[in-house]
Length: 233
Image (cartoon, rainbow, N blue to C red; front, side, top):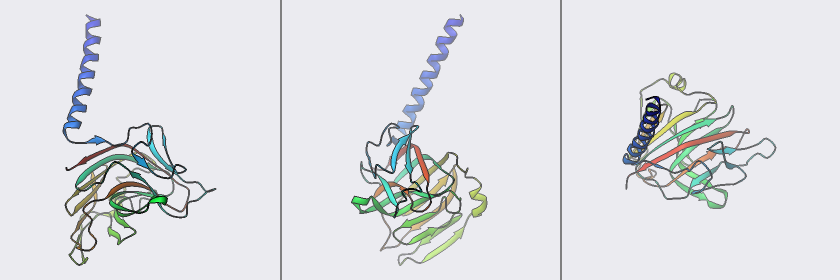
């Protein structure tokens, strides 16, 4: 009887795992990082590797980088999509998740476009920053509508410091980006951090590359794992 219970328990666990995996797949998400190597990604191999099952970007004091550079997903572009991942940043530095972006210098892996910001100080984490473009589009706690000529209308939905307290320093956090049409929403640990409605005729982007950043400045370490993408076809 005890043996049957053990077998039944193993069977139930396996069945639960399969059902959960199938549900995830049915929701349209796909894993775009295999947890083993950087297949499907391109960047400076001196800066990017896989450590402990996570994409790892690392700079050093001995050999500082002179410009921001990126690890670029090389399997296509994103338009309307949802992206979910876990990230962890060390005690110093700045990073971010680029999306609907452009590769500006292919040989140096330089990218410009929308960025879901990440930083060690928690000052900028969650904001929408346009790298090599318009700069900060929305601070944490802001919903910003950009008019057809780029004029901003700002609405405050939360306190930036209180929202920052939802983010765990030097620990794993969950980032979710939802881009639907001109509406761009950034969530960290299931909390909305910023939102942009970009109607700027000249600058709004509808499609582009996905990438991760290492930032010039102090030595830093940034890691990403469980990288899942659901893209509208």
